Image (cartoon, rainbow, N blue to C red; front, top):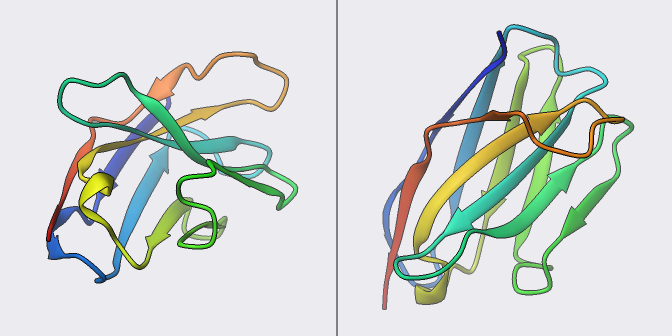
Length: 118
């Protein structure tokens, strides 16, 4: 069974940086799509960024230029580097994974809280 575990959340000030990690177990990260989502209080969960198995990446417009998604297949871990953080980035961040051919994310992490104070 595939398990994803996020870490790296915390409380930072506006303008600071933070790196989240998503450790994957139960399968290799190779040929696996990993995405990051977030959910702020009172809001629906939204897409943040995605790392495709071949190296391509996608970002939500709200984080483009500030966030960078990456992966280390040797460590079976994906990362979300967040820079120039804003108060509106405050949310619980989740990583999720799926095989490239699957339309849905079957595996989700438990989430990690990111709080940005202004």
